[in-house]
Image 1 (cartoon, helix red, strand yellow):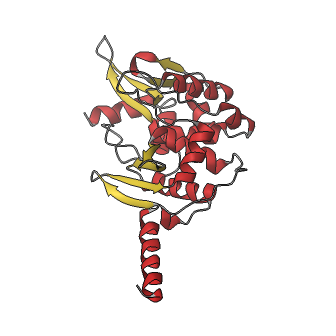
Image 2 (tube, rainbow, N blue to C red):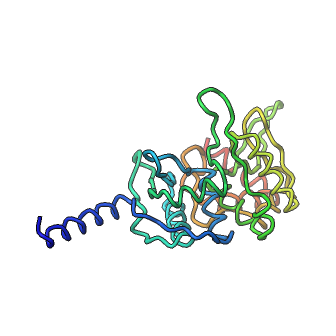
Image 3 (cartoon, rainbow, N blue to C red):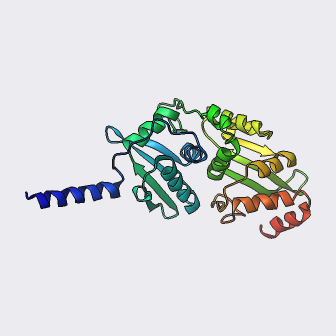
Length: 269
């Protein structure tokens, strides 16, 4: 093969690797814990993950229906590891969802070595993964609210609806919930919320953390809230497509004007 042909072949291979996201990365030994890194691991603990790719490499990924979340993942990866945005593949998946991923031995090695596993579901044999949050770093760098905001934006919801009481009258149900199947992580999320003065209920039977009561719901809204632009998914009968922050605002307004919202719900049954 001629030298020019070899060079062309190498360039083509390099470009193929670039598109596939498998270029070699050089992660610093002194990456500081930052808002961007806290954001990234919050995404990985919820709708993302780090999984083996081949024998030695890793796939770092996020699956979500929100382009806001996907863009945040891309931004965080670029900010923390200095890779080009083009390295991260983004494609449509399951009609309503997007998949963002990058393949990298070095980035995967760093994340797993520093934070351990991001797996939150049980293994096939029924055992629980050893996942745990880096509480000390999140607290030390004063990123509790920022970290929780991402977590609740991904796996949290506003439960605001009307229901019939035993006497047949309707009343409003108002709470903030976070779904998490990992018992250790639920305990740690509750611990972080407590740091902010927010009381929670760890509902073991439902794998859910619940925040309820006017005082604590308002405190959550003031100190944590949701990422702007994140919408309610089709799991909600009344609020699908609405922004989570807007639904939370309506819920807060209902404490002063419950009859208006009861009428609203009853008219939409």
